[in-house]
Length: 119
Length: 112
Image (cartoon, rainbow over all chains, first blue to last red; front, side, top):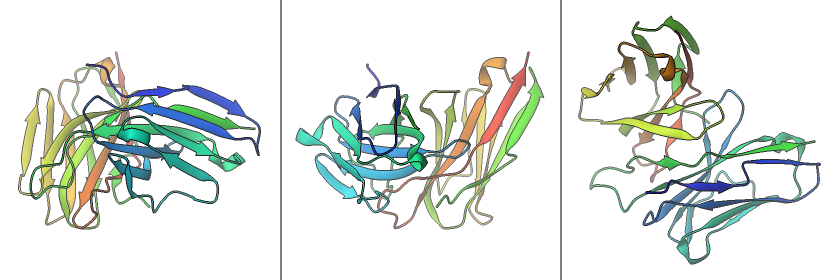
């Protein structure tokens, strides 16, 4: 079974330029997550999708970040314009069908991430 | 914000020794999960322990959970050089509506 696929793996851009990341979750996983991971830190959730609906985007800086998940499968995360502080690893994860009763989450399956460097 | 705090921040041991990492958290949880991240890679799920469980095993991994102290530990027995990675605890807080919160991780180095 293929894992979560992300592209590109690395991206170097100058500040104020736009950038987009793509994620293809594991087949059949209806929940998709975008995380930001700064160096030496754990991942922080940016947005979570249930199928094509963004059910939690409270941590997404909406002035410059946007995301979409058309048809409830692939997803893209965009930054426009990028700032120096956006340099980080952007991780995509997915999880399978609804968790068991009484639980919020099963395990999440992560992609390799996209390392963004903003110069 | 990150709910979990992990201790130690870095751990260096010899191959064959045991490694213990601790995680403390602040709010009541549904479950707690441990993930491993190799350098430059994504996170890999290791084990999930539910709030009504106290101990769980998976191969060389042993996880304990003390909800009264809001803490968990991950023990890796008979460590190998391939265990070198960062280890993160992630909590699923009650009423978080599915938001998983990660700690800042423990960097484990196992010397051959």
